[in-house]
Image (tube, rainbow, N blue to C red; front, side, top):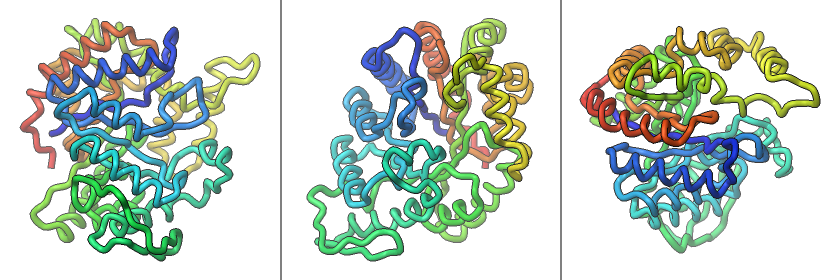
Length: 362
């Protein structure tokens, strides 16, 4: 098993953006000292009430300057928001600044609100994301200047000034539960993963198919499959649940639409849940409808909260059932006070990681 600190860099009450970033660096410095393998961030836009991370490259460079061992990167760049040549240049420079410690997540984007202010079509987002893999490989190829002519991107005779340290490029990730995208990931040796909103029992058969495809196409290599959710560790189950369970049920409040005048939190939840009725994924729809219900989250172990022993057991069971070997923990959520946050990270690093390090879920 491998372990990542994952962060939306949520807006936190009483903190300015600068103070929130400074808290983030303290988190990552501690994770690096404790032996975490990775640190990852999202790319979100235009919601000051939600995530304060719209520039994954700056996150990666800032994290790299404050850590020595962890591998860092976006999970991931929203590819359609970038010119492909500009993004390829940026990836190469980030990998050089990190001394070859970059991990590279690529995503099509999940929110139409990120696209409209840029004047881009949200419905046309998947094909550019997939084609960028070939574009990047051409840009980082031995032949320079390079040219590329695909369905989405066209470049003639451009020379990349700085190439990445890692050849042919940093390790690739693509969070997805879509069967066709998972086939693409297997063909291109891309590590996939998924979030708590997709049920582990539903994910398992899709990822077993992915593993079979991967084994045929990438013999002798084992993929990383990630799973991400909220985690909180304390000295006892009782203390952990008292401190974190209700907060965990508010961890993803940023997924809700902005409140309208006079609208309560419960009104926003009902409006949010109604969007997922009849989407053809009943398990995911049920989770989304109950994402803010602490009892539901706890009963179904969709968040991992408890003593080190309890959390280790929860993750081990989930990894086997859900077919993942990389756990991405969201440690900083809602209004969790920093002393509790840092104690949780320390207990996770000192007790949970050693207990699970040798686990091989598949």
